[in-house]
Length: 214
Image (cartoon, rainbow, N blue to C red; front, side):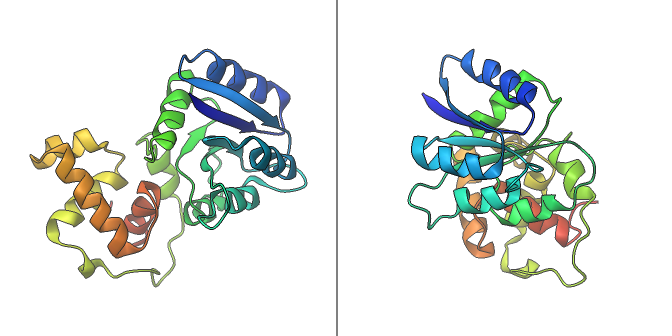
């Protein structure tokens, strides 16, 4: 069972997400929080596999809670999916760098919510062309991108990075590059090590910062 916690300051949102999670045969809702402080407290007590966090919450916002929960040095790191409204929020960049495993719009629908939770639980990240790519497009990249330079990656690895940044799954990348899914995973492992990033979302952010996607 995938243990899920939901944190949002709107009771109706928490209830709706809870009903969707509870209806899945492989998921269990283990906690609900109305603000960031409560989210951290509940997560540390219940140790969920995945936390769905709103960005704007009282007492402690979702970004601060994300940093505490997803920190690899934490006793029990939690995989976090950020749930937000699409308002070109500048906080998205911080969420990427703090280890978010994906993004959802609050009105994305049950199917995408479930997909995001399963992706996070499996150590992957949901990058939807209709959501995450749109968010990344509206980020304001720094004049001098931070992190590893583009030439640390091989041409094939750059091909993989560009497809990840466009929201392609491992299977889709394999099909487009005529390689196996296992090879895609090997490339991703190498890419993450070379770029010193933790997940696909950070790989995508790296690509967008360097204008590799138009």
